[in-house]
Length: 381
Length: 204
Image 1 (cartoon, one colour):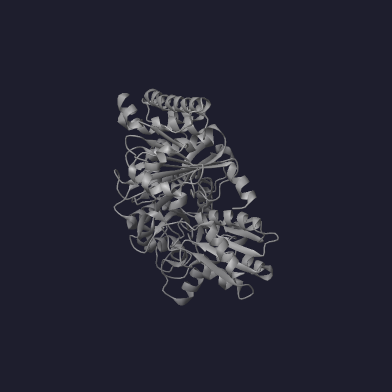
Image 2 (tube, rainbow over the protein chains, first blue to last red):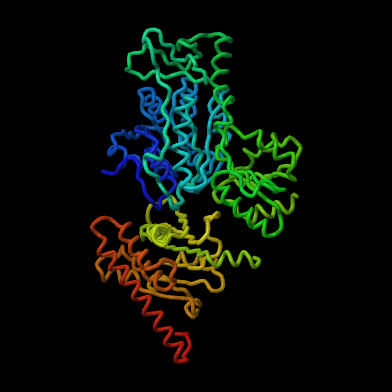
């Protein structure tokens, strides 16, 4: 039987690397409904999980898949699901339940072109705003965007660690290009992989308050069956977990579940900067589009254009502070994404008129070529 | 493209393998990519394009092999185009540049004018696989042929990647298929060199 951490050098797709990252992070429950281009994640988890003592369930649909990973997490397992656009839409209600009940889990969306059934086998990045606020109510979310199979391996581990640290569902907003791209992936020794587990309930079982935060704003979690008498609900609740139907309880609860993220932005947000030191034109991109952007930076530099890339490893929470800083000295911003302007709206907002921002967008179904990015830079700045 | 990009491009090989679903086109791409990455320790990417149908639809595997990092993983102008269906040939022939190497399964693809091209190489891959008892190994025969003719990956790396990638129990016959294609490729190259030396030119 293969070990949970497949240490070594592999030539695998982003989807398979994602599944291996989950196993390395300690994921032992996977509930999903297969959908292109995320099916290979489920397929790989189905073949690997039983061998490491985990559980794979193909649920009847994505509503149930999302519910299953919340339940598994409440029972103490690190859990994950993987889907694409139509399934992601179905998961939105229970995603909100996970946020409200502060249930750690990981949701992978290998984005394909929409709306609706769209282009099943072709890539896009059209669900980025849905990732931000696709479920109802006000909340904060963490969403990551991988740009290679190697990175999706690491990001899946990072997603589990963030979800366990801050107790919320963490989204991996991949895309078909990265999901189906094969590249070298190096999996380190198990001892070199840092994994984090949720803060656990301690003390008297009859006095435990499941939503009383620790000093970092995150509440220790009781696991179902441990003997703590806890109530978990999607209704607005107090520290005991019981519903309280008042504006005050609402302000306290929403305040806390948003502030545990907004007060830790420095710890959560990860960015990668490429040739940005002396850049006049700042390209902002993520996922597959960031690869086209990297090629564009090199080609633009050869043509004498001082371009650089700010690659969003974390898309949500948005790196507002860094964009504002760059806006003070940049000639302009170029957002490159496979939609017709979503993250671009945030770049524009944070640039705040200090520097112009233009979009190189595409409705999906193809990738953006480096040539198109350079043409836009030439005509805009 | 300016001079410095051309220099970068020199260490970069873009390969398209095309055919229809069920021929093992993606597996052939997978083996090439794996051989380059894990065997020859270069950078390589594999992207694939296919339709919603499981078998019979047009499909292609795009492999890029480079000494440096590969940012944009799609092929723009292939250095090597291997076609195992007429539809695949028709779709990609227009993307070839001067010096692109074309390889075809001669029983499945009529390359028209390209036949006269010095960089066009033909092999009866499917027929050879049938003679070995398994038509579905045509992709592996083609892989041996690509390796011999283009040198895109080293022969040891390719052979190891074949062994590593095919279903358990079929390694031996797949290596035989690979060797058949490789030997055929070496023989074709030798024949062409001889013709060139004897002054007959390369036109057949």
